[in-house]
Image 1: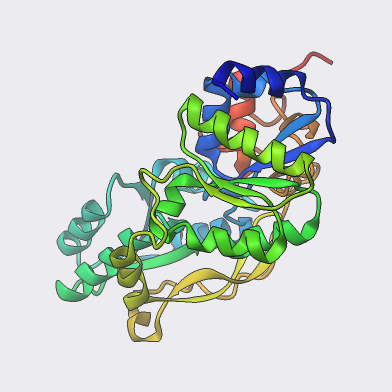
Image 2: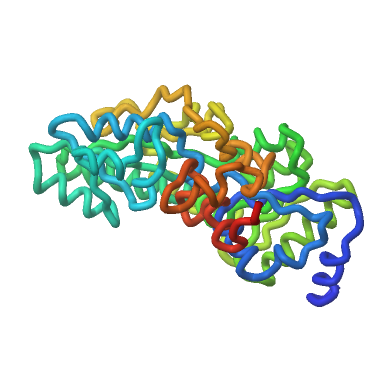
Amino acid sequence: MGKNEIIRWLREYDGRPVKIMEVCGTHTSALYKTGLRQILSPKIQLLSGPGCPVCVTPTAYIDKLVEISFRGGHRVLAFGDMLAVPGTEMSLAEARDRGASVDFFYNPEDALKKAEEEKETIFVLAAVGFETTAPVWATVVKEADERHISNLKLLTALKTMPETLGELCTAGNIDGFLCPGHVAVITGAERYRALSETYGKPMVIGGFTADLLLSAVARLVLAVNKGQGGFWNDYGSVVTEKGNVKAWERVGAFFEKGDALWRGLGVVKNSGVYLKEKYHLYDAGSRGLVEDHIPAGCRCGNILLGKNMPKDCPHFGRTCTPSHPVGACMVSSEGACCITLREEGVEEL
């Protein structure tokens, strides 16, 4: 079929109901901006997944950063969007307003320089992200070690995606997956190919242009309607089968895998990335988060699992907004709630 025929087919689709999860928040935003989400048949449902690192960061992690920020001689450094993520009692921004030592930074080299200049202060970096940012944090540890910067530490909330997609495959409420293109650049296509084969779910690694998104969604709908699995790499111009081997070797030199706590999912086995024992002096106590606090009525967890839409949440756009978020999905520009509010607004009661 040509492009116009594909668009018509997706608009008029009347086959079995299809639930597709776009794992990456950038895909969620692109599906709105290209207009593709708006033209789909009511029988095709697009669900946002756990591909926003800020959104899956548990409250317990924020609480630990807040506690550290009130310690004498310590300063917490975080990227801007992390400052507003709610903790059990307060966010990092609120902690700063109450006298805690909290600052933001633009790139890791800034943090390294701060630590070199203020040797009497212990700088704790909020190291949050997926496979795309893990190599950056590995480089930070390498630089700190080589430059003998002993007053810099990481509190890591680094996670890997395949293990969590496996959990979502077994949950059974998702028919097919639009896999994260940026993450796949690092990991390679082979990890998602293996997932598709293991669980029999159709999966596509897609790009972010209108044509690439159209192709990816059409492939998934067709496969689901036929009751078939399958794997396609539609982002082959950027994503190779093996990925960025050197970047992942850098990660492996400093980090090792372990269980990790995800907002909404709980502890997912072997989905975390932690500093090796050899580099424990650079660890601010990242392991062992096993409990999380969810604000009353907050649906972030179910939204990340594809069980609820943002507008199902009673807080959405009312008591929960980007300026006053209740849950993490409203904080980040890649969060499903933030994107939905920006693109659709709030329905009147």
